[in-house]
Amino acid sequence: MSQPPISNSFASRDELIASAFAAADVRAKKAVVSYARETFDGRRRVIAYALGCLAPDPEISQSWELWHQVWSIGRFSAELEGSVKERQQAWIALMADAVADGQADRSISASHDPERVGLLLVTMLDGLTPALRYRLVDLDSARSLLVEAIEGILGPTPSISALSS
Image: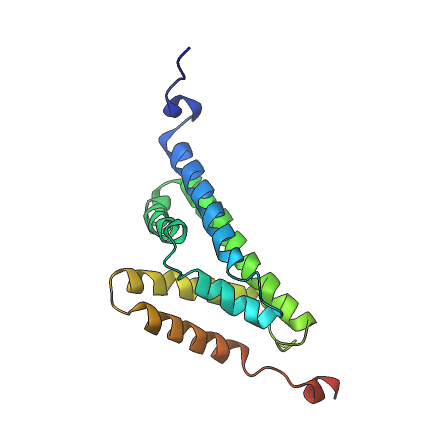
């Protein structure tokens, strides 16, 4: 018995694209999370997640390609726009959770709003990856810029004495 074409499983072209996009993005997110497996505090996890997004891992780079394509056509499709927003929120939450973990373990100052920092970092990555793809910046420079920006956003690691006062 033959299987129906995959397109018969979806009500529309946009539904098919949204499904493929979400599946690729979930795989990329798992790959990025794996780069932070050995981190011991929230601050290092934020940095590992961000640097993981730039890793030359095919799973991640293919996801970025899809991101930029779906992001653009999502402006003309409510279904794709919803999928992009949902996945974007997942990435913001990943970063925000790491910031909150850093606040809990005192590697990040409690003065930061984790959601705001997550949004800022994801937005920064959204701009940096096309620059990397089009060779406006090389990988080492992109990593350096990213770490410098994160350190600028988060500030110095709070000292124990400053936290107890």
